[in-house]
Length: 289
Image 1 (tube, rainbow, N blue to C red):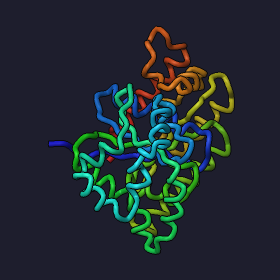
Image 2 (image 1 turned 90 degrees about the vertical axis):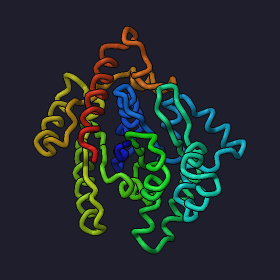
Image 3 (image 1 turned 90 degrees about the horizontal axis):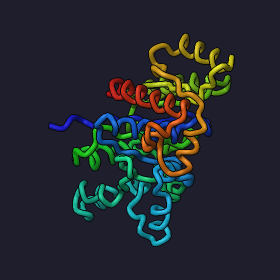
């Protein structure tokens, strides 16, 4: 019997903290650990996950040829359930949405119509209905296929309707932060926001893991912020910080993660970053509900 899929959203209300990079590497690490993984990119026009996994051109060709329907935005439309029936059920509907990658991760990429969908959701009066569309998609379309052990969502870097749909759908949140004062303050703010969501909407949302990203060895600021996060967030902090490595950026620009690079071609910092993503992915899997 297939176990219920574990779900997590990657989110912080700030760009440039490594949300997409962390989502991709955690996903690739989980695949290496023999889990079946689906990623959803809700972060809009950047289409970062498709770029990281080297399928951006293929996705954009489908968009240009009007073949990108249905897409991630379509899953949150009011009549999605009827469309699933027209397509032939959850398996067939998922086949229309999913792109396979060379690293074993399946991806439902971002689409330009996400901006319109965010505005459309704002016109839904009932908050429970407005924020539960994506949860319905995971419950009624993804879950019945028994394809995936883990679903990871890459959320926008702003608290909009798509973001809240992601948090409603997963309940567990992964937050990468940089070793800076602003990022630490935003992590505190996110923790407080999740408390508000639990109290106001009766959604059991929580911070599952905080990853200190782009840690710079030998820098007092990185060391100080790591100690500060340990003291304040305790066990919520990931087992390993992810060292700053040019190879991470180089790999994602080339259309793959560190997990697609042969061990003997990894730099010392690249190898350390990969090991950190692996350990954090294993810990995250155990934490997710």
